Length: 159
Ligand code: 4NP
Image (cartoon, rainbow, N blue to C red; front, side, top):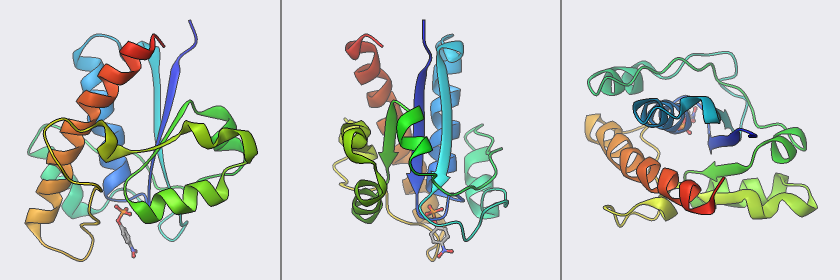
């Protein structure tokens, strides 16, 4: 069976999308189905390419036993849009940028992270970069909710 390939995308790929990647990997591993997935993340910008995740984001994640190991990279078009099955943005600006970057027949792969939430009414995963501790905690709260919903959605899709 082909793996389900998921790419999480935010602006810089050092806070939200590397966290989404790590939360989703931990969730599928916990369910014993990690080998069925390929999970990655990328940034709309390449400003932080080659860097590990933001130290503050890493510390908040570690407190939940989530280890952020990915190295920032920029989204590649058309390659990422052709390769991945799900391309998931964190906020409305990410969504606009992804639709602009996507080659013609790939835009149906794009969705927004908060669309999978069942416990939170947020319509975006807010950028925590210029804020304080509460922002990093909120990112993780929303991502844990959204990843559970995303996994249910994928299982219902029969992929
Ligand atoms: P992210 O957060 O998009 O969640 O990785 C940000 C990281 C860096 C910047 C903005 C947002 N920045 O302006 O450098």
